[in-house]
Image 1 (cartoon, rainbow, N blue to C red):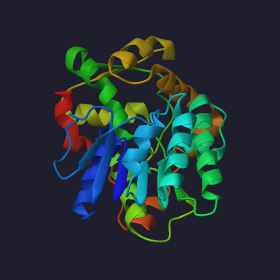
Image 2 (image 1 turned 120 degrees about the vertical axis):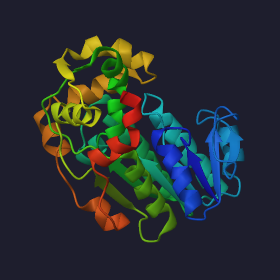
Image 3 (image 1 turned 180 degrees about the horizontal axis):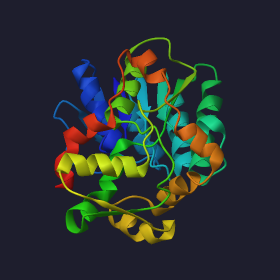
Image 4 (image 1 turned 120 degrees about the horizontal axis):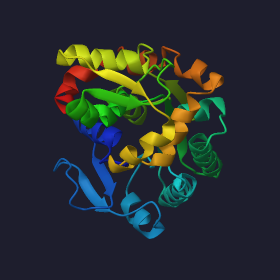
Length: 287
């Protein structure tokens, strides 16, 4: 049995679907029992802040995919999961971390994930503790969804930190990494920093969307604080977006974010999806 935490999110939905395709027995921890998931997924209600509900969700589970929200509660939630999983006899936890954890960056989000990683390492060191694997992707291709309403209503994209090129990654590929690590041997105690197959600036991504739609889209650069109201309205954590965009103003982050790495192909056995492929599958959200 594999427990998926974060099963209703952008990556988690792909993880559950791909695990089912692989013939795995899947359980999902959700806050809302009415969450729209495949009927093949065994749904349990609970919260990472509630160890009692975690204990129930982890009963009989061998492996866990851990996706926390990336907010300030991340270290506590990761600690709750790790310690409860150890008590339940879980064998392996795969944590979705972040690029900044790979390079030891000191921004808020990287620090939160690093604290969670350290807890998993510490718990794994106990006799019989669960093994860990950390996945450290870069920016998701799907973040351009935040531009959809602007494109549809104004024919414009208002964004900040538009100059740096980033090797954006398809959430389907993040899930494929997780599923490979969960279902094949030899990944315990390893970290995987990976991204997409090409580094693209914001202008290049906007240009690809415009070409696919067959109309012009104007890119307007604005200060980061000007975006936060719309980000919150879209259901994203403003502090996380503010931190991520702020990182792109740091030279050491830019250097790492644009790297095209062979890791995904080495682990999964196929090339990662391109931005054009992601866009073709999601173009309707911009129409």
